Image (cartoon, each protein chain N blue to C red):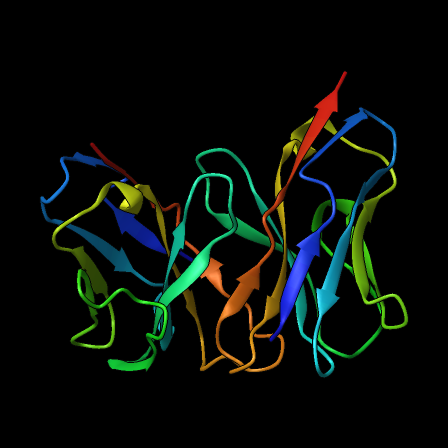
Length: 116
Length: 113
């Protein structure tokens, strides 16, 4: 079974530029998550989708971050404009159903973003 | 709010000796708890999970964790460390809404020959 795919793996941009990350979840997984992992910290949820609908985006900085999952499969996370503090690893995860007790999330390798 | 505290940011053990990574949780009800491992340049991998069934949970690669409600702890152990166990370990609790995973800050495990 193929895992969660993410691209690009690395990205370097200057502040105020725009950047987009792509995620393809495990086939058949209804729920997709984007996490931000700043160096030295644990991942923090940015947004959660159930199929193509948003379940939780309470921690997404909506003035600069946006995400979509139009067909309920792959997803794109965008930052516009980027700030220095956005330097982090952006992790995508998926799970078969809406999170329930003990539901396992499967993580992709992440996209490492450096904002100069 | 559900949260976890990993008590050690770095742990160093010799190969073949026991591993103990400590985690305390804060929860207003019976939590769902997880341990994930992150190897360099690799994705997070689930080691084990606790979901109100058996308090001693066995995971992959010889790891296990014990849920102790009286101590609000969920420590991760392994009887004998292997060089390949060197990685970052995260204790995780499911959030209030039932959706988000709340991660600890991580414990970096170093295994020396």
